[in-house]
Length: 155
Image (tube, rainbow, N blue to C red; front, side, top):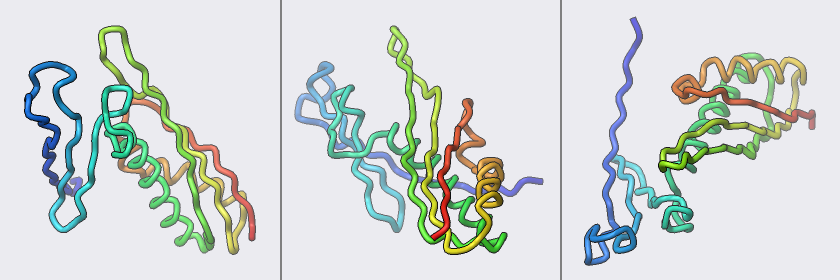
């Protein structure tokens, strides 16, 4: 039987500019994500949808979740395999499609990790990306494929 893990957060809209949601331009899209014991994450919508470009948006956070989950599994698998990762940096990209009726959805995410190994076999390190993807909680929850194109080198 599968173990269950539960997560909670509170989303608080902070964008009432005094006119409530009287019309599309009368309110800010700013909001906070609050999770007990953690710093508040200031968010908004994408600037294309009248959001604050200084704040994270849900689309940013989806991309971050996929990239971060893959990285954490990859590092774990490398540690188990005796591969010493010295640095890991991912330039992840996501594509969202917006339909004429306003409905949008992500159609693709591509991870592009640049990895520097202190020691280990590059071919084995490359193969571990498939395993990391197999175990990634977030990627397993999506309805589209996540691609991974890594560059791995020895220090």
